[in-house]
Length: 475
Ligand code: BYC
Image (tube, rainbow, N blue to C red; front, side, top):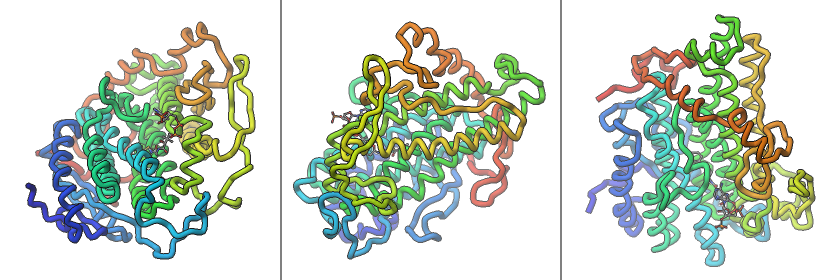
């Protein structure tokens, strides 16, 4: 049996030290977590001392303490945002009732499913990113990758805490299964599609952290409204960390574009082959990566019409993004929402009951937020005097989930037949040749202050440190 001192090793604000049953459950799980980290976590990183942000409490001073640590020794804390004893459920059929501190029997299966689905994405992303450290474009970027990895690990702990604390034996079994499924595994894959895709290179990593971590933001924000108070408080705290992940994605892509624009201007060319020959990533390839990550990520919101979504909302398990700021009755019965469907090979809009369309409502909120950042990337091109613009593809492009999975659509929103799709696929989505080219750029650059030739340096360092700070001390 492990002799872990929980209050020391696992910073927490959930009185871990006083709950023997929970401690025993965690004592059983913790060594398996470390084995999982060693097996499929960041490759070759065991002896590195990494300049990491560690949360040791939820207050503004406590949640961002920086220092060099070995990732294996990272203090995977368990934190709930401060509670409000009088908190009321503010949407669905239980609106006005007191929030739940424990799981009501009738909602147990659904809540468990939501928590497991959320929990499953966290280790999945660490698995997807495990080889990236070997090809980092700089020490600064390497540190950011590792920061994201440990925080996804902490988010797994957050979900495992809920499962072990509130779901008894089933919860313990689900916690074990979270370490057994593996991203991309043929026999035991991760639950959601995007988390079984590869993240083969750093452009994919930046697109993933821009788009897919943003799905995290919207799903966590919807769960932060939950009537199940421990879930609401946990996910609220997770959101504080998620912001940095999206920053890494947005600024990463932005720096790639800045470098490409610089090369295009130096060579006075928009010829992709010339840009590539000069060691930068042509804008066409960036657009195709964007198309892929965007379409795979919007699938993560589920089917456009979902009775699960209606049940989750009406029973108070999962709200809408910024539920509290919306001015409607927060019950949504009798209201409608427009979704797209395919009729005789064409897309048409139709009104459906709002409750059943809540996956689509959240997807549309996500789309608005995503487009804003793409516009900021375009500002980089505009400033450099390059006329090309990056464009978010049509909502129905390359969909695998929901009603839109049934058609083939061009990025600009034309229904196309199989023949055109096959002919244009490599113009619209990254081709094996694109992947091979991007892979060819992925050399490892890790001397402090040095950057690979395909990406510009960041404007500033982490936690007010200089850009050439020794963010990782290699052991
Ligand atoms: N891939 O009725 P539907 C993050 C399944 S990201 C594969 O629409 P529902 C992070 C679905 O399970 C945020 N299967 O489902 C980011 C269902 O299966 P069954 C993660 C899919 O339940 C970066 C069937 O299709 N959090 O945190 O309404 C790094 C019918 O679908 C997919 C959450 O997702 C898919 N994409 O909606 C690290 C929040 N989509 O029952 C972390 C919790 C659907 O027929 N999850 N299916 O076997 C949920 O709220 C819901 O489960 C979903 C699905 C919105 C995902």
